[in-house]
Image 1 (cartoon, rainbow, N blue to C red):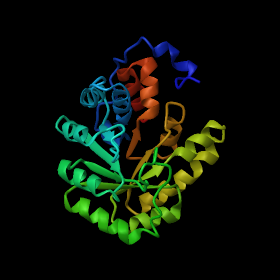
Image 2 (cartoon, rainbow, N blue to C red):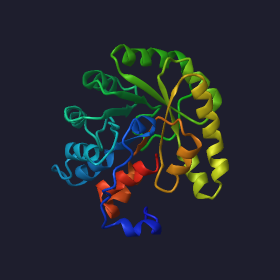
Image 3 (tube, rainbow, N blue to C red):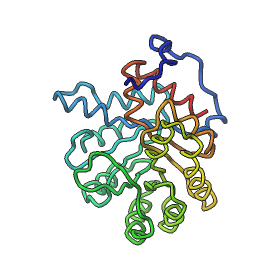
Image 4 (cartoon, rainbow, N blue to C red):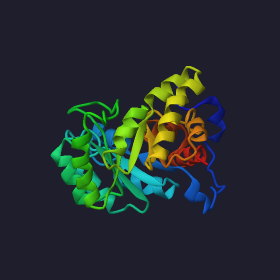
Length: 267
């Protein structure tokens, strides 16, 4: 199955030249951070430096992304720690580093490179991809300790949570600046046609986060089919981080077109 819906086929050979809203307005838009891990996966599959992940970071920003996301893992199976150091040098927007704060090497890397934001995920060693949020009640004291380390270094902190009001309330007690709603459940239920049921727990969680003064990010399995509906129902969403689907679409549409299309879902 193609990642690109049939309604987008006419865009394949076309570049988007109409500018996005010029803001003031931009301040009210949800930011798009592009996860470039897939470029590193492709590079590592063959060896050498093609594609060049630093150039990918430069280009997604040039094409309109509001930020760059990377998720380095200890085995460096995609983004390498040295990639992170080199990418930091060319960031002109925001830099978001995701990872497992149980790994001291990750903590050290974040403190060394000082990104705009660090997103903490409860992965285990060797995990293929992040697939659940923090239990913010059970790990409250642990998270408070780790979050304080990053905030004391001037780094904004977001933590991965499931769309559960109790977990959002627990997150508020940790000192985090933001939460990132784990959206795989939304995407799967949306694909089954249950749009309202799919988005309902996310709206409830986001509303509670807003009441508590937390910023709200979202990520995982968001794509051109489901992103706009999420944004329409959570208009106060601060940021989405998207990698896999956007890069799949870029294979057919081109990277610049894909970045622009995703941004348009967030207006």
